[in-house]
Length: 629
Image 1 (cartoon, rainbow, N blue to C red):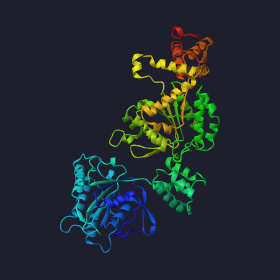
Image 2: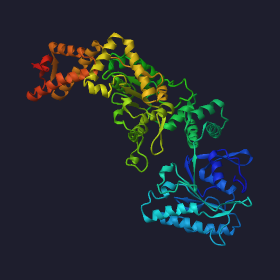
Image 3: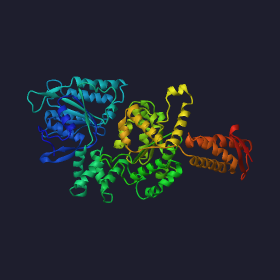
Image 4: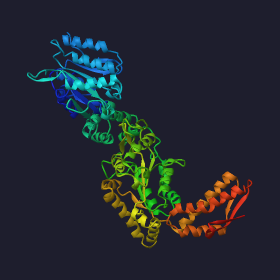
């Protein structure tokens, strides 16, 4: 049912009220944001219809007494959104003649300028139109040229700007003594920055109006409407709360899709939240669903302890977070936590103690043996501009079409493990991105698309508490080594002081160094400090590393590597002597003492297939001189 001319319905959405007001205030309206959605529009007898933006504009213009609302349709050329009354007035005949002239035309800069001039001329002379007309350009960013390079493009943008300054005025319908703009141009695009810089968006002649996505009240109203139409029954209060809460950030169309999807799923208390997840991230191989992940988590502590040696506290915390994620209880203490990531860990501690290895182990546990975490070395993001690598370059910049590394990765695989290594080295403005990720579970990329992190497991690693200042490095080049030795001594003599040191450094970094206490609050109780490995763990790391070398010799050279007792004892002493560099230091030890010497030996004296290569002894005081047999 159309709204009768001359009446103004009680408009429920702010953007409708602003458009209704602006029709008499500015000759150009620029609508941005949620412009492709359905919106609730009141009709007679308190009923509400769902209309698209162009249909809403038609009703608003009709109520304002406009003679016509034209649209520049990309498929049909110039067309009318309304129908001329019968019998047609002289104004309607002139408008229809113009529509017939430009119908089915493919508009370039020249033709669009000619149309705008022709519309302006309708109001010229003694027989000019005396009732207002509006033109809607629903795909302004595609219809207008990308840049004012060609002469025709510059002429078009100049004409648009001039129409804002010299727009014809007519008597306002229904208000004696008042005047309004005779020609109103309504431009529509999702993002304002999609328009060319030459578009005259500044100044009083253009009024920018942003359309927002439905808030909680609107989503509740939509849920009632869609549940009634899909299921044929009135929605219960718990169903309304479930749909409205699970669809935060959704458009009205997506709310409808959620209810339609729920109708295809088995009934249950989580059917609407499950449907909302499917709408957000699609049908994925969800590692959290079914019995598979439960079976893996049953032995998670044993598996992780085997992968990451000597870190029972970190393993225990990780298992707790994984268990919460598996049963859907992450963030259950907060009513606003529906869409937050499945799990978050912040791992701090010295280098080489197993932070990165723990992230790899979690990935294998959840996603399979061949899976790897999506890793970002945050030392590569030291400057503010590097955030473009994560979310994409802005329009007009190199790389805009490629998107961002982070948003692309999560869009391609919503259920993944994200590893942000050495997070303290990133620029603080880049860290601000995580406020939205950790709180709302989503991020908007440079192209305006929303990426959801609700199925991600996020791990941050940090060396906060181990660094030395640049001034200390200048005074003592070995300052970093000495700091590692001090921390190792503290770990061995005052373990509680060791953990308190790292916790204090963690809090100081967020609260004082970068002034982001809100980010630390969002990390919550997911912080854990890793300690140094002990001698027993060091020996096990050593033996695993040597076994890996032997496996490589067997695979590549078809020979057997044997580590003699004396050589093994020398390596054990060296590994236990310097635990400050953790497992990584032991791996470096094996490389410098065994792998390098073995490579030289195999290069000089290739072994026959099936041969045995025995490392009898190693002499560390003689630059790890080997004795082979």
